[in-house]
Image (tube, rainbow, N blue to C red):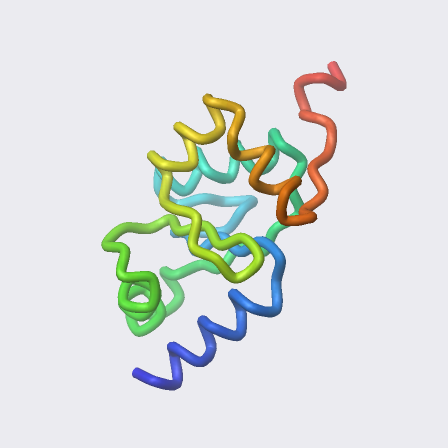
Length: 115
């Protein structure tokens, strides 16, 4: 399993924001992953989506890497932030945007503000 852990660690460390999810940002394949994609897109955050459905080793590996049992999982600047419920609560409380800003991650204008 060390090979997959090294790969995960590299993804987490080499990207400011990484979302390990079921499916892709353009085609989420579970409701929870879809909710997190909507939140990140709403905040205008640039992130990398990693589809855990491409490999059983990756799907299991990310759970062991984070010691968190569910997917999706969001990492910001190498730190595990949480899954769908935590991210939704942080977003609704206005804390998620602050977390990105504190970590130097640029947020854009919400998509809804353009219309």
